[in-house]
Length: 110
Image 1 (cartoon, rainbow, N blue to C red):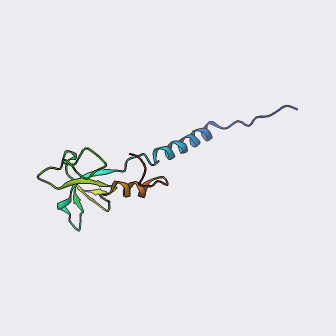
Image 2: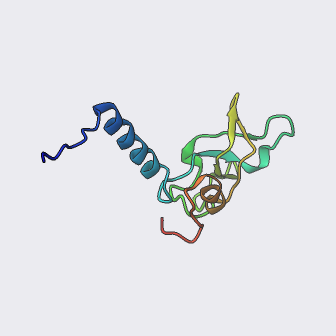
Image 3: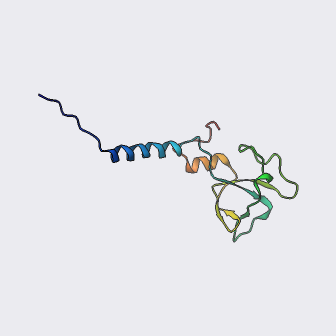
């Protein structure tokens, strides 16, 4: 008896590979979307005013160690950004990772 091997179609292989890649890119280690905002600029209609990244600390893990004197700037994670304002996000990086992670907890490295 001759053995017959089932051949996978190239489209099946490509789609399966893309699924694996998508899962890998959304894993725990990825950083959440962040914007540098002025904490003192909150407006109920718009949210926090987005300011230049140089006003926030270059470190993603701590709250603005090198804040500008002109603003009370800090990183704001996973906010909806519109017309130069960010809203519905969080100042907690670990909370942002938990929201959009892949079964991750905030205790992971990074």
